[in-house]
Image 1 (cartoon, rainbow, N blue to C red):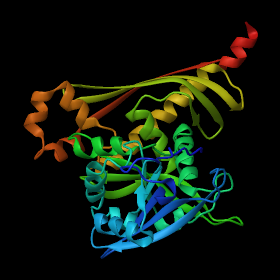
Image 2 (cartoon, rainbow, N blue to C red):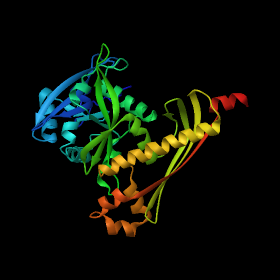
Image 3 (spheres, one colour):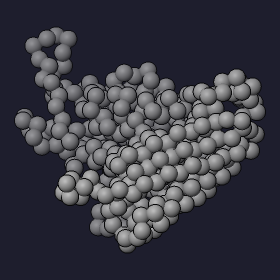
Image 4 (cartoon, rainbow, N blue to C red):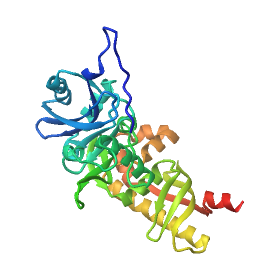
Length: 348
């Protein structure tokens, strides 16, 4: 990832670039206190052509306290505009710390609202310390991995503003991608392993990468993504998910146009039915799990709130958990398999 920072000089209100600490990412750990590790971009030459990370650790009783201690370490001004990722340990998130993080980011315009958030299975610092092969700055590489995993339907891609909206709005619960460390090779690397589920800003459970693809298909419009079954892989040319609520029944209408990438070829109609059955089973199994957790990352409640506001006002918040657990869910899956756009273009 390229990094461009304007040279601010010749003005008393400006700061020389060598007086800035350019923060590329943060990790948040700790139990009784906040242990924050900040990844700083080290500009090793005057032309800024070579980048390397420096890790600085601070601790405080609050996130803001730990952050303010960072500037005191080197006596330089913090520059957060290029920060790409904030990693938070699951231990912190299970204690409801997401609300404190939201407060910090919401009141600190130094961070971009598009900064990516992720939960970590164990130590968030350990993820930040990894050394990816393709980028010397791990927080940049992690951000790219999250975007690519979203394209593979293995994890949600969650900028801060999305997590903020889904956490604060009634009728939907937030999610974050879940990252662990893969140390099976010579070098320990970040590994996206699923999705962290939240209820009222508290992490309540996780789902696997396999379950995540059904969450994403049910939750939002998906296109130019990869959908896989046990025997086939497809490119989703277009994908539409429409949730309808009427007379106490929620219906998921999902329409997908797929192109076969690999796997055994079979009759299109047979394959279309197989994929439809796979999606229906996956979504219904996932919803049963989410109901048991009283967690609604798909936004079923938000759909009811928008389509039947009077009914929503009657049941939310006191009766909503019971209504949600007993809500009848139906699916209407329509799958069409078409030639690859490149192949169709060649044939024409």
